[in-house]
Length: 442
Image: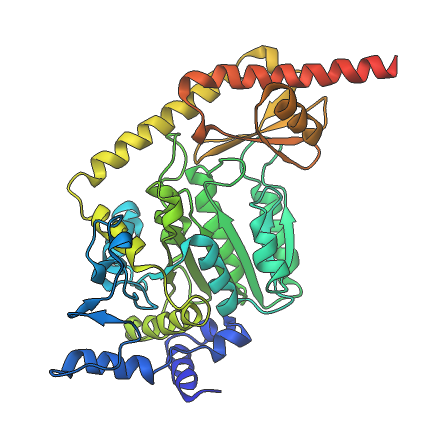
């Protein structure tokens, strides 16, 4: 093991040995290298005549560039073309943390790590798996999930996925099934890994406040019974909450410092929150209960995380980070966010209004939704994939089929005035297939 990794491990063990035990074998071996990086940093600070350490080409003291490239970029080369640190731009990390605490008041006064910048949440999840997930670890997920979890955790990292029904028969979060699944897993495992994605993709559901409180209580009970709990929060659609009763804070805010056996990991991004999907700027933040000075332990975790970034993509794009930082610091930022939120809220409200029509009741049920980009229908009379293809080929309408019965509709990309027609077409498509099946049987 590299001596730097050993040193980081010792720091983590002193801060909380349970957290060290949760690290994967790769996570224990990870470190942020010194060598060229530290020498370059020292030269940047002290070299007054020539600095021949930088791994980029320069001209007249700035990054060398093609005018044809810079003609498309409004920022100077040193804010757009040069490498960013593997940790991410320090000012962006600090600013994102400040916004995180503002959006999650329960974090006030709780020591948490400084976010590490990733290439959006997909990369953040993969980095998280490198640090925390060993082959054959089991990850607890609901039965309604973003399909990329299978690629990231099962295919690429060899983990096993165990699922529970997301919704109860009463229509809310299935607390009893969630608890039963965790307790069954705890019979055979010392480390429990649970991924909580709210607002949920594909259903657009966020637990109501009493459900969120109970989720936290269930995880704390596991920790009190001697199990190490790794709680991963995929907060991709955070902030897009359309119902007064739904949680408005991330579960991360309630789990950080909840128990020394709980490691809370928040994965969020500007991607969906700030409508900058292609800029690919995400963050990993840690929260747990630590002994002594938390900063030292978090610093060690940040270095391991930056080491995983360094060992995969080196760093996230400087240009994207600079753009996000500038937007976050803009005096119009909150006004702009509120304006877009209102558009999304109005679309979600219109979907609920349209689907309240009783004419749809024999054709589908509507899964609960109160947030995010999506909602789902459970079809009663036709196959989901057959309906998807029929809608596409006959009516030029695209939706996503999920299994045999479920259709995901992204109202995020449908204008409010077009929502009634969209669902009428889906309804008509289902009726078309019903009639076709009836005629075939006759």
